[in-house]
Image (cartoon, rainbow, N blue to C red; front, side, top):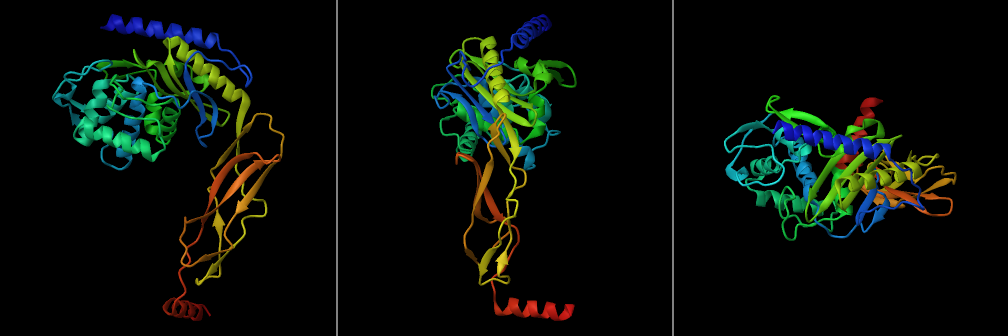
Length: 384
């Protein structure tokens, strides 16, 4: 087993050296990839920068586990489980095929070791074990996966299992895998694990190796997330990368070989980083106007936008960017903090839309009543 691991590591390392030494810089006019389906998304905005048959429904293999990791991340955030919890492995792992970390029914193992096994080693048995622990059965967990897919806008996806083992009707698309990858990026604790090249579980007794060789080279900016290969899906990868404040997600499905999928991903990343950049979305220089409030304790209310918004523009963009604010003339009291009331649209000077963001109420204003008026009058008298 140790010899097999060493051979695998040598092979993957050779692939990596070849890939990065043969990197090709591309432009918008000449980008060409071998894979039948791919997409490039800017992760902070969800803007699609490149696509090839991105909504084609295809088998996606181990990229299924990105959704499993997302549900696990949310369970951790909601305190349903913690990384330090210990799980007793069920009989469900007895017949698992494909990538695994040799889990045994009855074995005690931490959630962190299971998550590492999924994120790094793409272990089918670890995915199944934690799915049973969280949902009681794989069927229940898959129902949660499907529900989450619908919530986040994955319209091309039908999940049949939690780990991507080939099963009729288990399909997704490059676009949908990009969406779930974008959502997983909101959980850095898990995403950090997907960027690890080699690690151990079981207190150092079992070594695990990442098949996504792209993560080996941090200088290129690769930060994760997942690769996978099955006969039906071909060689697939959903990779993330950051450079110069630009965060990209590249999904490649159906590659003929592992080397092909990684070469395609690098070409698409080069296109994105060479041709796009992000800039901060600023509010209007004069600020947002006050909105009139009818029947409220105050006659006007302040509004705001989320300050952490980005606009994706072409690199070398010299055209002036203008913004247009749409707000109602008035609102009926009461109004609540965070209530969406309008939007701001950013456009190039040629009126091409670049981005659109919501505008929210920034203060609570209660409805005017005799009691509230009396209370306000009393407070005013006290301050005098």
